[in-house]
Image 1 (spheres, rainbow over the protein chains, first blue to last red):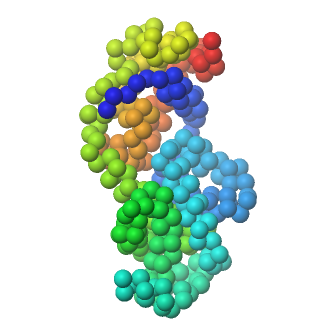
Image 2: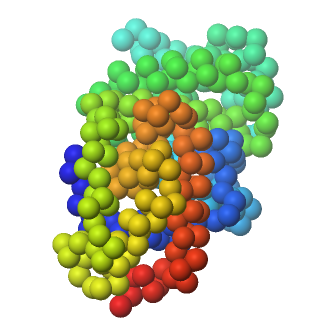
Image 3: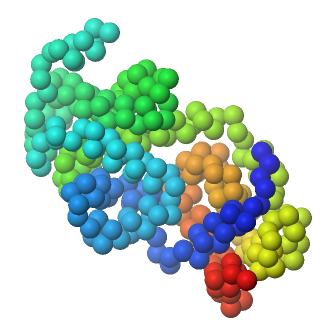
Length: 85
Length: 211
């Protein structure tokens, strides 16, 4: 698969490199908290401030972000049939 | 078909609290398992209608089946800090994406993917085809230089597969006999080393991108 190094690709890599934090949680820790993060988001609460490491991971990990966005879509679709905690 | 009709016209799902979900599923209550399956199907169909609409119904049943087994196996890990069904939906979404990614990338080998090393052969001054401004050419050349000097072969391969070719972390991990979490940490360490390399040269992102 041939990949051309375009300006966009170089810029994206450099931005990702410079956005690196000394401490970042991994995909497992994100997964363990993302359901709580999603509920806060759907409730209009400030999930990013409450769980900043999850927010940071979702910004950096395409796989987890993709799943999170789809989780939100799924939860919105089934909303109304959820029972209280 | 019968199963779908039964679910559609049969007993209404029971509304349960978190404690009731855990209790009923731990007891392998058949109504609870049926209700769980029905709820997960509603969620996973949303994923599949967007990602694999042609096979949505067949795949949905398979993914829900696998997710139910995982949920029953991991009830102990549910801490109750969200609704039970929200937690359960994260599991079926993970199952669905893992499998969809596997299918999408199944014919792509890591060796073939990174065989065309785009950074190699790019001298420190950069390739004129890469970018237009001097700083961008330098940025590409420096990035290549740092990738060679600061990263291990494994880190370079992972960075190229994920950041250049867009291969999911799951899939790179599978090909490296690793797992998603370990591969994220490998990539994190690689990004840190590259950042430190740029910083040691007194370079900021703005300097590298603006000219």
